[in-house]
Amino acid sequence: MSTASKLGDIIDLLATVRYLNEAVFMAASHPGLTKDATNAIQAVVGEMDSKLLAAEERVEEVMEALK
Image (cartoon, rainbow, N blue to C red; front, side):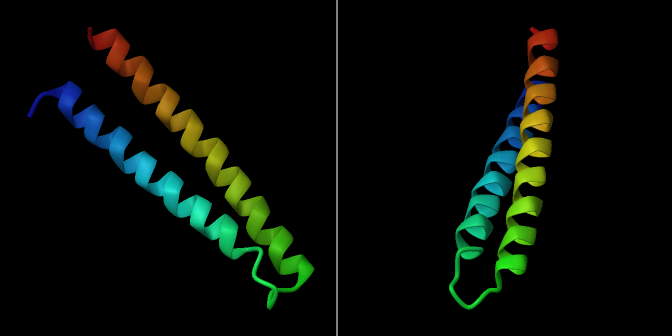
């Protein structure tokens, strides 16, 4: 398996984590949660989204460098 292929797999994994993160965000709106719990979950989701974006950008930079 080539390096580019492995990087593509990493991008796919990051996309899956992003979808899971979105599901957690949607679950945070459950009416049974307190406002503090909802805010905490949404803050974590926001931070995870930021880190996922940074990781995706770094992988894309590496892919470009390998071309």
